Image (cartoon, rainbow, N blue to C red; front, side, top):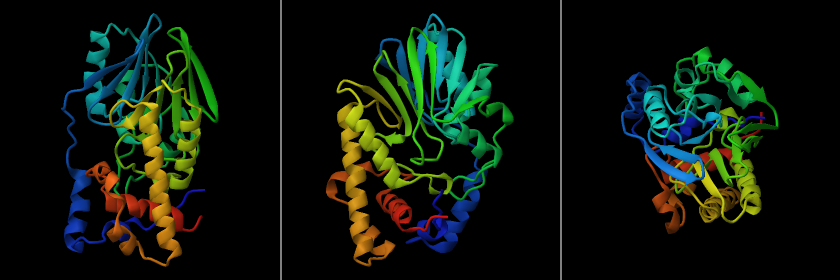
Length: 305
């Protein structure tokens, strides 16, 4: 079940209300242009990672063509295609989406061109409901961007000489998250289950749950090979050590907020007291420390519906 939380109450804390309202009102109308160049990182073997506007993309290139994990924003699709061509990647055979947020699926239509678009079944269900994101209206996602093939628990594709296995991790960042394992290459794309060196956004309105996210990261950190290459949803290419550090951040934040709730502290008090100094550099404009603590608070405190 989803957990709901009063985002407007939480996010307005400490802001002048009228200014806050105006900012939220104009943000959805600002034209989004994502012209920053992409950064190409060779991960291992025939696997590459693309960083830049939107979520990180994984590319598998080989004799069978190109497989993408995520597709960034629509207006970044031409850049992605240029990179694929520069690496002699060939036609796109599959696109896998790690979840439904627009910075991960926006290029589906432009890049797919008839290729299967694969995601967990909840991704298609969420797109059918025309969701808002972060209390802001989001224009309906074109049907051409929707998954054409969905699954429940696991799905395997045999492509470019290896098994590429998609696994659903329920109610972490959203209720439709998948991780994609390139099994022979020992590379995994974790989508937004993992923000490397950044506080994560957890979408509590659409099935996200911080405790469950932490359990998934525990499971992954305990089971992945020591030399795994890990592509996060956001942030630089990671190692198992980076995932272990993220695990500690989640555990310490959960402990801090649980103790505050048990002591009868308000969300304002918990946010004002903050986190340990070692995590201050993890703040970023979309999820500063105060907001991250609020997300954890409401994930723990809000009643299930």
